[in-house]
Amino acid sequence: MKADQEKVNRLLKTARGQIDGILKMVEEERYCIDVFNQVLATRSLLNSVNKEILHGHMEHCVKQAFAEGKESEKIEEILAIMDKLAK
Image 1 (cartoon, helix red, strand yellow):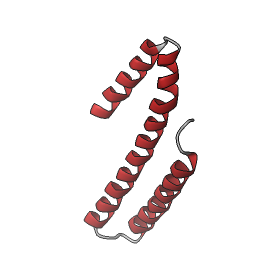
Image 2 (cartoon, rainbow, N blue to C red; image 1 turned 180 degrees about the vertical axis):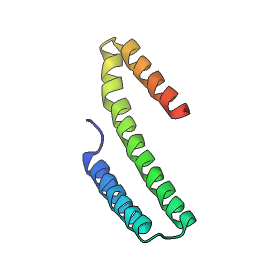
Image 3 (cartoon, one colour; image 1 turned 120 degrees about the horizontal axis):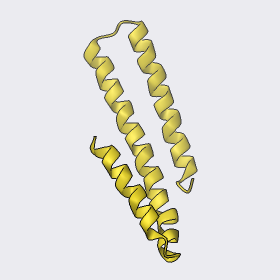
């Protein structure tokens, strides 16, 4: 993985902490909307992780593929990712 591993690790550890907090909220039968909002916040954080990973991929792997004349494979990968994001 070519993304900033320190940043990705920090974000994932924060997300793990948020998920632990959500589990505790569920166990404590906290107000539904409060739990919902925490899930949204965690999802947003995980989206940031994906963005960082994709950025690293574009900066390293995709650039390298274009330099080597192997851009078709990487373009297909990116299009497949875009399809997943659109769902």
